[in-house]
Length: 313
Image (cartoon, rainbow, N blue to C red; front, side, top):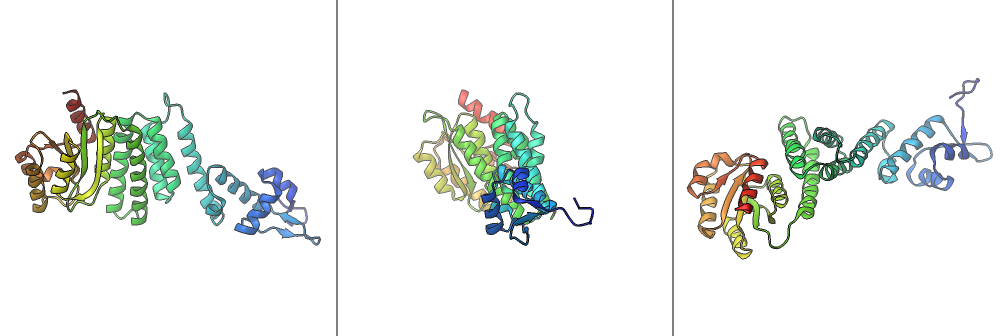
């Protein structure tokens, strides 16, 4: 907005406060502490704001109402602020949606991917938590987390996703899966499964998906994480009287060390303790898995069915 003289119209603080919803004290604090805007001063020392100042303050207000701290967003350019706000508002809308006719899994998936690409951990976590709350447990794992991990891995291998973005995604997904497993954890009378990865296998997200699947299938999960020797897996299984040891194998594949680990695991476990193995690399160990009587599964759906059959049996 400009005057007839061509000069921009300036707005006094009371007008800006009315337009943005900020109190004068908070407006002054945002200016002084965070440099949110830089108003011009009249000859008498009064603050006056341009249309651009009002627009920026309105964006900052929207961002903080979505849960952001002003210190986290005050340095962002307006275009970046707008992206953050839109992502936050999408996530909030997903969380408010009624579960009976709420968003399809694809909406959660696309919103999560956009958050990863924007390096927006807050929106990513809120989106995944909303998916976990609004979708059936089986659907959120099979149609959101599984495809999300596959897509992130593919983009990273193709060089289309930076390592930092991949790490942000993995860290956030771990945190949400841990929360989901805690919420779904059954009582002490449930069958027990030990979940982890063999020695030398550091990729644990597949194991965490398996653990969350097991919790939702009526099993009490003892999650041991990645890279554990066969003797330790077996010792833990015997100590808690586990019914099953579940392993995720991703990479490396066809590794003789892993073959030996699997044989030692079977040798150290009671004969009544089952072994189930999944993950992208599991099929490369088919011979030794058959040798030790382990079940190889190729999806979370197959694992879920396998676990539920054993509960009923």
